[in-house]
Image 1 (cartoon, rainbow, N blue to C red):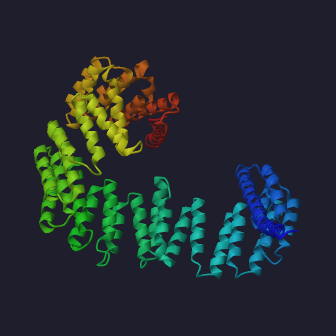
Image 2: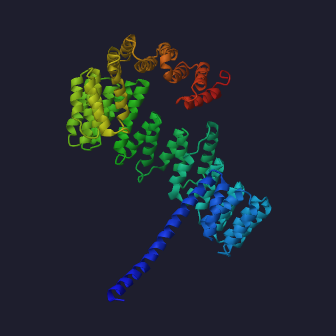
Image 3: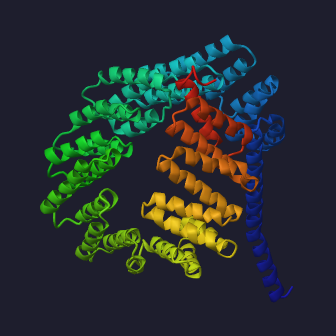
Length: 611
């Protein structure tokens, strides 16, 4: 053989030798991936209780991979579910051979005994495992989980208690017991164990608070839980985290004064009003403005150097405005303005003052309806905070809205045209509205397309843009009705509701097509209800119900009628009939769940009136 041939042979053999491991490796990888797919399919069968199908996959998998713990566990589960106890016993023996001293197989065998109705013997074996291995914490957990899977709740809890007695430094066991009780809706015991856990592990109080605040109970049960909380919290006066959880729990069930007392007691120089501020924000969100205002005032008075003080001023001003609107109280509104002016003098250079100044403009506009004063305030903010684009654009946006209210669309458009950053989509939408009011429909459509292009289908302004785009579709089929509707929409923006209803009536005179007609009728019904003309509001709803062309919207009209009768006329018997009719005639309606919940409340509140 020539030297060249010999060299080629050597190279060929070398390549073959190096390629063999790669081929073997590829085969192993393919087999592994195939088995994982098979295993996941078996688990899906198990989750749908098709253990016979799961068994056909798991048995060959385990036979090809004897000793594999994961395949063993799932195969054993399917054997037990199918009551194949001899096969399960053989599997346990086979698996034990790979690790003869592992006590987990004693636990599995006890589980087998329990499934085969040898319950006393199973319990004895589980207890014996713990007696023989008292220092193995994992075995306590494994035994408890086996007990739970067999419905032995109290026995599982006692196993965890036993573990905690043996491992008093393993505080997570208390939390596990509390979680068990919570899942079983045994809230009294859950509260006791959660609070004991927090007393040992105060840093983890937030996770416990989340668990406790997720509890959903009826009002009667809430009273009982509140009493229990009050009693248990007294056991830990020196654990502020428990007091904080108690305050949050009281707040969750609208016991605001009691919650506020706890927050007050927790405050010190280090916290600087932190707890009161969190309470005030939550109370304000829940519309408990008087208590929120008290909390904000305490921060302002007691902690003038607190990092929360400016936000407290802002919250206090907002609460005064809300109370003024709720009670039509000019004194509260003026108090809010005085508060803003006083803080402006103290903190004139602080950038946060911009928000308070904008709020001052809102008070002039929304409460006193002094549009000129509001515009002056907004433009002053835009001038003073020109180096802060976000603040300046907010001011321009509010000024533009105010010009629309005043009726000066040209100046409004000029304000919106100055906006170029984050508020641009909203500004474009307002420009589309202005074009709509002026019947420049092509221009309006152009602005709306820009909004959708900027924000996509999930943008904050997109739904409004699509809604207005749908209205523009009526410009050919109902031009006169659309003009009247545009005029009504502008009047609504200006808070001229009576005049808006008149223009809506004018729009109906033009016999608009169904899509526009139903929108007009629903708008007229809602405005009439806001003006306390309830018979007229109900009549507009009835017109929808009686119009065959509007049958797709009958459920919405019926729900609105029921709400007016229920919340405004306070006629529970009639409201009950309307809600009940909605459930019977429109079982697929989006309003069904709300109607059903309200029916339940009406039955509870009016047992002598409601059937």
